[in-house]
Length: 230
Image (cartoon, rainbow, N blue to C red; front, side, top):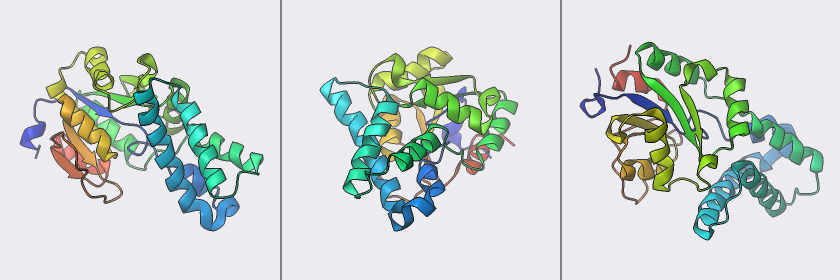
């Protein structure tokens, strides 16, 4: 049965990194190279990648997400004392460029499209990164659009990023169901006016931020049922 707060939905919009695509996959594929530094690298790389997007947005010094991703990796490799291995750096970047999708993603998108809902990605990712990940997951035919902050030159959670989905999809904010595994992104989208489902894959506590979240799930498998889609 559909969640009453998720009725009259016209579009399902997904964050990409951490929501559709596994941000730890690149480091995991290099487990033999990284050893016990695998998990610390994955965590630090992600933290730096995100913090650089926020700081650059505040500074008015935008560069694309691929540059930010490389900068975050370079910091993390240096911090962990593994910055003298250029082949490993390149291997990690090559893997990040086409990250693995979570196992349920294709089936969920297929169900939503079968129910007549518009589907899209709204991401910090650079267009080439998003295309590579979408192609690798073979989900391009299940998406109506792939939207990047590249068109705006500022990162989430700036309201103009969420407005991009409204403008491009032609669906009012209150009729967009937005999914993110990033609690700060969920908060930003809720503040903007989307109907937000927080995909709390990592069992994190709620952020102390404004922005209403309709419900919390631990994977996207639950989403079709919330929307009354079989």
